[in-house]
Length: 265
Length: 153
Image 1 (cartoon, one colour):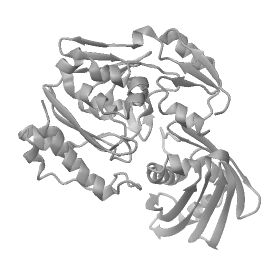
Image 2 (cartoon, rainbow over the protein chains, first blue to last red):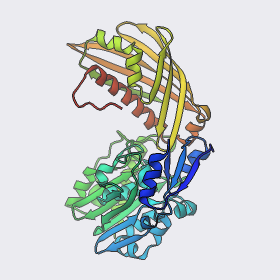
Image 3 (cartoon, chains in turn green, yellow):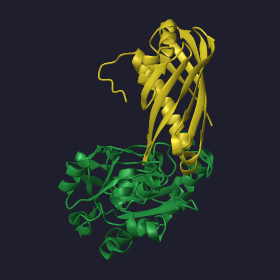
Image 4 (cartoon, chains in turn cyan, red):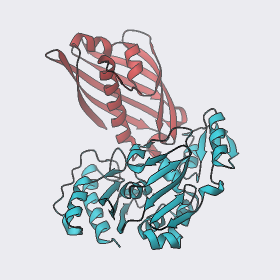
């Protein structure tokens, strides 16, 4: 690892000013992507601004049907939160399947969302649920937030404070994990929301998470796994790599969507 | 890995060809290009900063133009060292054809990435390379077709 300066931010405002003063600084939350990258010397930020200790960025609040999760909340906390399990079990279940135990106890929802890895799990849930990402300066709808491969609408000195969404009447997440990394080769989050059926796919699109509108239309007329049988999923624009080619991924999108709908509770 | 694409550019073939041979235009179009110096008509040296998610690597290398067939076609070949990050090399065969007042640019490119960046990023190299190639030619088209409100990156 290259030399870097470590700062522990005491508040969101403190983090914003520290990152603004730094030469080439990075926000550090759980560090489950950033630290391995730094250890491999593939990134060398001049400063690390640790936001994991900021008190009001932690915890999960369920009021009525609205769920708010602090950005520094770890995947393990999301997975075992009883209020969330009751209000929106699919998201708790998704968090329980991220990475391995070590990743879940350090990695955070804000970090995952800000990194926008094209195979990360949370972006599928947030996009399907029409979540709102709240930063130190504004609120961003999930549909506008996830811009492309590792790209988000965030500016360099913007800090995600929380994410919030309305609990859907039904939802489930199904993923085909890479056996080594547990990243989604393909993951599909299906939800019946106040705005209709929503199907968001992660791990497959070469521009990151996306909504499968043909499936949404099919589910709007008939909410059943069998309704997806007639939907054609092309391989164009899908990721192709040593683990799975685009055609295989296209097939997985269909299989995982079927499992998600069938598994909806 | 192999990449290909086609662009329609609202400019004459001669103008597109000139731009393809102009270091300043190329510098403005290569994503992340910090420097491009021409050492001869067909040789340039470049510094390119690549940012993919958490990875930030700076490549230093050479760009050469080969198989020149003005104003119809050439090959642009690049090779760079990114220190511990690894190396990248690639090339593109570029063809121009006239279509009325417009020019159709088509390319077939290949790219190889090695070293640490390839190991860690194996699942993302293909889509990143495709994206960078696409960005380059889109920037190139925009450079030749000045439009209002254009955003270049």
